[in-house]
Length: 502
Image (cartoon, rainbow, N blue to C red; front, side, top):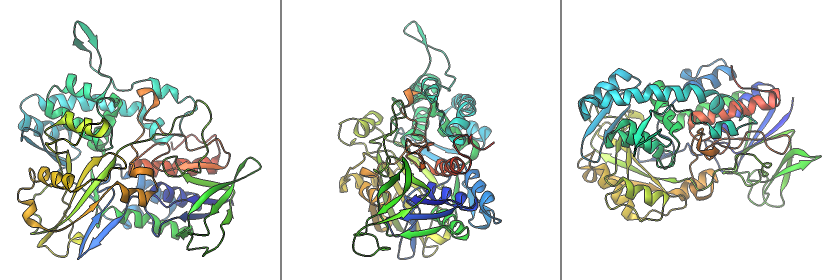
């Protein structure tokens, strides 16, 4: 039985802790804040409750697997999962709307043909077939296996089977998501639908590789799910599973350094000046046989990788979230999620990834309107969340909040008249909760693009030290966090020969 110190109580760390504990190890989690879940938090006021991190769940099988492997009670005995249908409502720049059913290719094809005109659904359906091929080629190396030592194979090879396209007397194939939209989907509204999946993760579709086609495919193939009571309930269930497996938690304990001894990780040093657990005074060392830390985006104590390793990602965008307490109940048949697309695509992309100011037409806004009585004081009120991608470290002012409300009113007329109060959460709030500079939000690992969207391996240059969570392989997103925990557990328990789930 080994002693294992886990730094931070994010979702990936919790997943690793539960798996390591059930394997017989003595696991202690040191969390600098006073609660668990990382970015998966909750805001409550006046009987209203909001998720302040992810509001929906994809690939719930990842978390089902965790509960199967760590105890007798399955996931559904601990939280209630509800498949969201429709999957999304899209309000495009020209005012056209499309309501897409959940996990139904035929239904989506029909809905797009009806909304956008004959042939639109067929082009999207054909794209999904190619996206599935990209998924089949990358699923194991990007989700279920430790990062390959020869990871450059993933960096150089584009798994998406682009359709040959004649342009200026030359035959070309789409190499970016924007080119897939322009050359294969051939409708600015379908292109906006495609690009919104990249934008949701803070990725610029103009340079994001075509392999990002796996992002809409995941949503299509595995559906979108809500958690009754909010996604925070998933974090609670995983935390409680850790307690059942006798994982120890020390909250209010900030780790300042990874201790090394004889060339390997040997524990963590805690800041005695800030640690509630230690009280005032000098720091203390907690010895361990293995240390599990956040990836490079979340903890500065992870040593640099060796030459030729994946370079940690920096500077990814963050989120502005506006929580709205509304008078008036949620109308029957309302979509849980609505994406209101910007009327100024280039302006928005330049504002996010260039140096231009915010677009006058307003940003793309995701509107979440969950059908969940537990989130509101009564049926005469509604809890709505607006989400906007913003640059990391930005301090969004009232102008951007008002712009988001104006955009949201394209999907929810009369919104301002219903607002009782609002709570604005900025990148600074994300930075405070996660410890990531600027409140950056990690993107999932993607193949191609020279490895720019891969994440560093879970094993590190220091023996005994492993990294977990969104800034380590396989990257950001709730399913990826769960897989990260599974990979770290496998590497600790089975050693470097571990090759992932079968």
